[in-house]
Amino acid sequence: MELEAAKMIGAGIAALALGGAGVGLGMLFGSYMEGAFRNPEAQSKLKVNPMLAFALIEATGLFGFVIAMIILFG
Amino acid sequence: MAAEEHSPLAQFEIHPLVPIKIGGLDISFTNSALWMVAVVAAITLFMVLGLRQRAIVPGRWQSAVEMSYDFIANLLKDNVGSEGRQYFPFIFSLFMFILFGNIMGLLPGAFTITSHIIVTFAMAAVVFVGVTVIGFARHGLHFFGYFVPQGAPVWLMPIMIPIEIISYFIRPMSLSVRLFANMVAGHIMLAVVGGFVVGLGVWLGWAPLAFIVAIFALELLVAVLQAYVFSILSCIYLNDAIHMSH
Image (cartoon, each protein chain N blue to C red):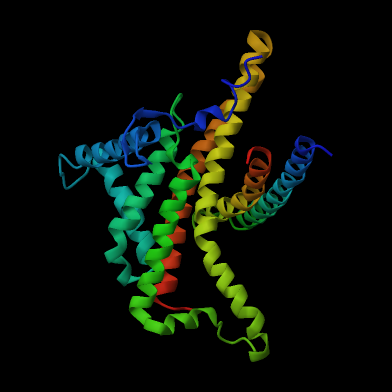
């Protein structure tokens, strides 16, 4: 197999890690919504932590994106 | 097709503006350095002009400056405790530099200083080395006890200690790559969808344009969030070194 073709396939497989980010974000905001709907008055306390977790989960998915870029262009 | 000049990666290229060579080292003043100067100038103007009036009841600008001060002061107080106050200038500089750098990178035609791994790695390395030095200065050789988690059975130690050591050394890597990857991914997406807008022309170009507006709002949120996450993780690592809570 040529190197270019192998690079493309490798980058495509590395980008699958972003699916995990999608699942994680869905679970995070799903549980946030559930908590917010059950107890709307506690929402002001629930604001900061979902944002922190969003950034950390998104970062893990983007690690896979960075590896795909390194494979393609590095 | 002229794919090279309009590649979505062209926005990250470094161009020397004032070539300077000393010995064999190339320390030119590049577009990245220019934007860093612009970021520092913007931060300085924001703070100096905002505090001009020094009113007891602050106006809008002074209120914004005070809010940014309070935000980091509370971050340090919540995560490090009362001993965190001496590290306030460092964490505040870090936060404002990354925040203004990320936001100014979203201006059309701008260069995002945090989109280069060497920039984010330099900041993360300073945090990591600083926190390790602080840990050794406060606890001496006892700091090595950080890698031995309390309450774990002795027969697990040969596995736990290498895992703890690896996860400690991964900190500067994850801290730098998190910021770098978020900025690069966001800007590549903006550039690619922008190419679609131009390619689809007047009749169909409004669809990717609406998408760009939504992505731009997300990128603004991510810019602020990544600055906050970098700062709060630095505070957490600092807390680990000062109070060895392991």
